Image (cartoon, rainbow, N blue to C red; front, side, top):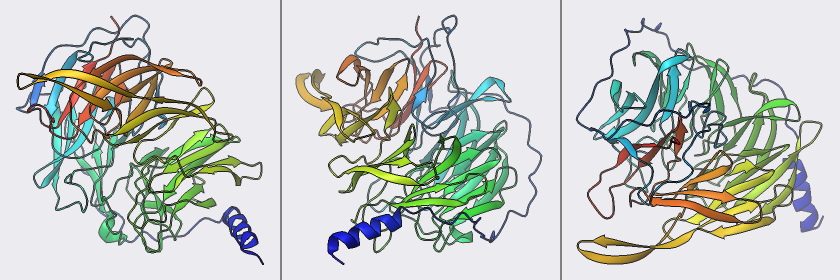
Length: 496
């Protein structure tokens, strides 16, 4: 058999649907202690790290509001259905409502109502010294309802940021927090009381990956699903949200990646999509397609860089009956199409386009993404998911003149490895140096509507959050020009 025939045979084997039997994994140490009754909800109070600037404007009549309870928004697709947002802002950005000096980490805040109504709650995780803090704040004032803290000894191997990466998820009055060392907590949203906890690293022998535990858990009904990455399985695990017990586990060959699980309907069926595969020798990983209720593994597609020291941080994106995935370190992008029998076929691959941290969006029948290099280049790319061909590419690079130490300086900026959010028919882009842009785009071209420097601090890799007309941005590092420390900032994006 020729080399071409061997490659074709290997690819055909990789694309064959897997046996749909329910995997059996024994829970090594289910939580044994019944949850204590939650304490009464505390009042919100000010604290020394909080600076309140101004109250936000009232919401415009008829404006649509949405909560933001999980990573990448209510549907984990980078979209919000909110209306009544300000179409323009000044060179300084939208009005600043409040700011909180924060510790290290990359996790996004999450915002949702308490018991289906007001008051709403914002939950944010960060690290100060040797403790991880989970703060519950009032979204409009920044005042704190409660703080839950636990110790950590984590040290990152590659970057000087040892804080939490995984974004919490709020559902059913509970907050699920996956810590950077694979600590797993379920907290009562009203009070911050611990309902259950698990040490996944010890119980499942899960090793720390390159950047610790990064993926954000996903709630599906009563299940909390995570790319666990235990040696010999489970690679993906579902826990009961009320008790913390393992409900199902799936997969044995791949570890945990930095990408977060995604739920979506393809050809009339709800399915779970997980990009797995972290630190391994030889490097292995890929896309897993599962039944979210049973954990049955229905399909696998190898997809990981051949570089050992690499990560997959961009989550899979559903584009109609197609699924798009992307990774840096020489792997590039790929798109699969769903077939009627439940399997998938490879549509195209492209090594020249690879996302490291940000996730693409599906809008107007096209894929949109920021193709960038940190601090050096950044472009908005529109891609045809059926062919992989670029419809347009708009470089997002500009010059700014500002005064520093009494001297005027002109520097070139870019969005770098920025993040996208879609709202009211436009794209809101947060550049990795702290710039905020409103972008009007069609598949043929894009133009910048407004642009502002919220701050000048690199490694701004945490995606922005919009909820109830307020914009939340995490400044991860100290400002390059000035004394502003890492912060969580709340801006008024409400239209007058």
